[in-house]
Length: 124
Image: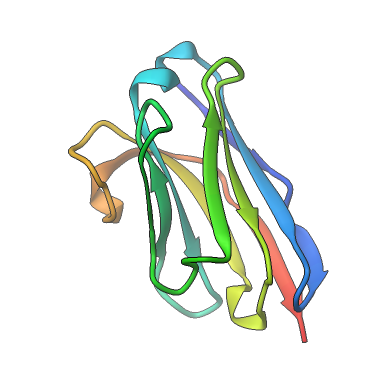
């Protein structure tokens, strides 16, 4: 069973940057779309960004467009989320996930495998 492990979360001031990483345990990762979701305190999980299997196509949620960048390195079985100009409302647990569905997968149910989550806290 493929496992996804996130890293890179933490505490940052508003306007700062963080980069999240998500590493898959197996090379089958390179044939799947990958995505990031987040769940703010007391709220439902929401779509952040997704990248197709080759890395050539990306798609973002409206609230992060222009500030966040998703990328992947299939030689390292890793997908990244570069987060710039962070805002307090970006505070959430961030999850990476793997999808075998159609492009672009923006709904939680389109993802078959999830990481354990990484806390990102943005102070004002």
